[in-house]
Length: 128
Image (cartoon, rainbow, N blue to C red):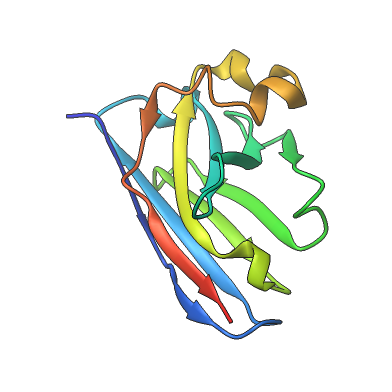
């Protein structure tokens, strides 16, 4: 069945780094726009980064630009989020999501939720 499974979350001190991983199964991963989203307690879920199906286009929210890097390995059906310079404000539940390739046409669309139809269960990141 269609599934996204995130891992790599944990607790880290401010200034530290984490690498999140999302493994996809049950659908054509290499044809999908992929995104990372974050939801902090009491806040709406926000789009952080997205990457086109072939990996040639990436999009970042201003809040993570220069600190986070999204990448993908289509041979392994895996999505990554390298997070450096973590801040307390980065704490929250992190989700990966998959959408049609066209989702990654424009930044606003790529970092919005509406076109993403497949979601993982999330992995918790706590920065103190």
